Image (cartoon, rainbow, N blue to C red; front, side, top):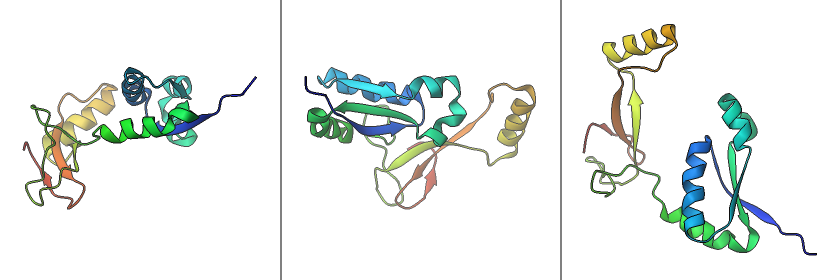
Length: 138
């Protein structure tokens, strides 16, 4: 009996991210399995310590899986599904993030920590990876 060899093609900080990519690969006919997802679901704080949720595929499916994963955009998209472009340099390597720069968002964040609830007010911005330019809605 021949032993199957699996290859790690990606790792993610949280299981929810890994499940999205797992679903994409499975829809393309690639058999996938996750490792360390239950550990991280139990205690998300250990994700960085153990290297996150690992996504494995069969060795013979590795090239196909890597091609599929590269085709999935990890950057922000607008409402029509197009990549958000930086108004400063035109790059499409733009991420959406939460910022605490004004007094209202800082007080909301501190109040939320005291009450152990999720913040009820957050301010979001886009940031270009190429030129570090921050901007509001595109």
